[in-house]
Amino acid sequence: MQENRNWPNHLRVQVAEQAVREGALINALRVEPDLGTPARGGLPGTIARRTAQGWRISGSKIYSTGSHGLTWFAVWARSDDDDPLVGSWLVHKDTPGITIIEDWDHLGMRATSSHEVRFDNVLVPLDHAVSVSPWSAPQSELDGSGLLWMAVLLSSVYDGIAQSARDWLVHWLERRTPSNLGAALSTLPRFQETIGQIDTLLFANRSLLQSAAQGHTPAQHAGQIKYLVTGNAIRAVELAIEASGNPGLSRSNPLQRHYRNVLCGRVHTPQNDAVLASVGKAAFAARSKDQ
Image (cartoon, rainbow, N blue to C red; front, side, top):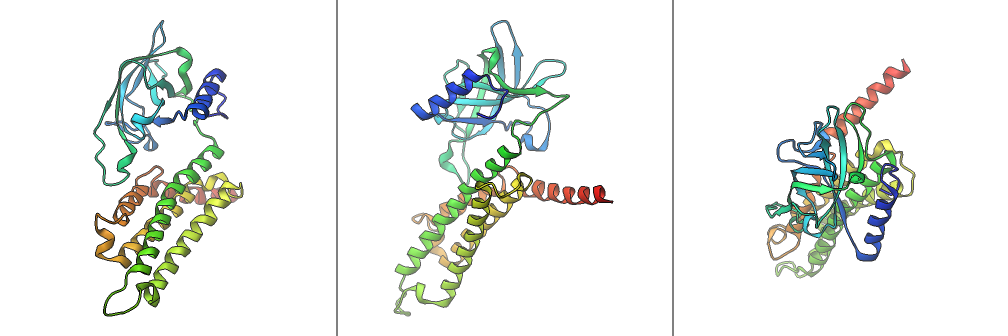
């Protein structure tokens, strides 16, 4: 946000100061009931109509992570012009006309409060069209550096879930002493190998994330970071489930929650097929350029 020159300076300062002083949160509300994810293309159904008083925004957003806890919504919408402006409008949570429909009932990430948010003729000032561009000449809201950081931060969430699953399994294996064994499961080579597999997957994640965070990874690999880190995280938790058996799937233990949460990495944008298709397309494009 701070590097996006499209934002009016006073709004950048206001949002940043509230975040630091008051813990105010902002999130992008993009997915819609009819369109689905904008990552697959298409115009938003949410419309911002220009009036003498400001923009009047109407529409609905689903999977609005943090809904109740947000101070600011960055609402992905389009204007009602012939060549519509498309991008983000900044909306404060207390603006009249906003309704949160508490319909979030997901397998994983249940605490994210990702409810539907509806906007009914919500009025915001004209300068709150903070990051928009004409549909005929679209501009990405994130540059390469922004996409890379988004991949790092998003992937770190799922890596953290896998780390927690790993720690639970290690603790459980050290404490679990079957009567016919007379020793902890952690003494068995089978389980030592499993922990070795998990730790190696998480070591790969740590290496990828640290390299990107330190500026050693080119921005074009952002999608691959998300693909690899989330894939490793999912496999790590799967190994923990396999090793623990029924106790791992018991609701009284956190491992089943970690498993449900980490699976959400597969549907979090960018999704695997889009990442791999983009990488493959780039490979053929590079060959064509060299020929």
